Image (cartoon, rainbow, N blue to C red; front, side, top):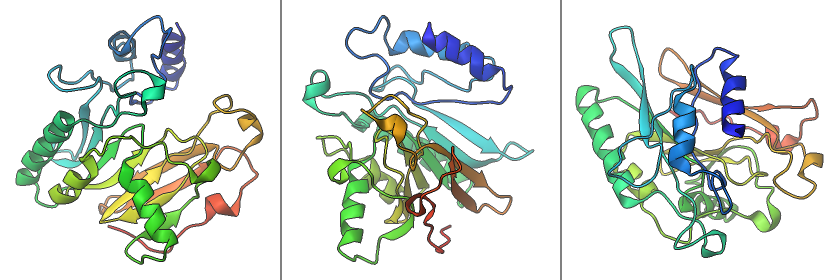
Length: 259
């Protein structure tokens, strides 16, 4: 019922939108699963959502291709299900993007590159890849190969909600060379954006007021992330705070312009 209510609300703006599944969409006690939720989302008049192929892991693995007037693909937006938990529920640890998802994604990107050798892609998923934490720790040690872009880590003990599984999505993306931006959520208070091994890793801002105890009193993470692809192909990523109170930890930006 809440998913249906959400779709009715968002459709009223008459602006195309989409989403990726996280780890709380259908936990223990839920009345329906991801397949049923996906059925609700696909009914949205302005919702660009697909269940994706049934022969690979997860629900909601699909591409949205930004094209020119001649329908040449300028930028693929890769939407991926980073799944929920491992061999069980919450206490088994977080899952990750699976090998078959990764293979499907890289193969499809490689086909697009044959048509347009200069193509660059973005990937969106819920839980951060392990390399995000790796890059942050290297940056703290002074590794100049990691470029700070904006934001901060505000979770307790500099927490990253990464999978206990190794996962190879980031490694394969580096080898493939087409994905230049990855966006995630999951960790409610983190807003960090870094560039590592040629890929910009960015936490989206949050609108959550209930997830953590007393999070309603927090503000530096609350807002949206505006991604603008310009006509010349450059990409601009900005944090848009929801309130007028702005922390320098959120608004801190690097002058480095990538891609």
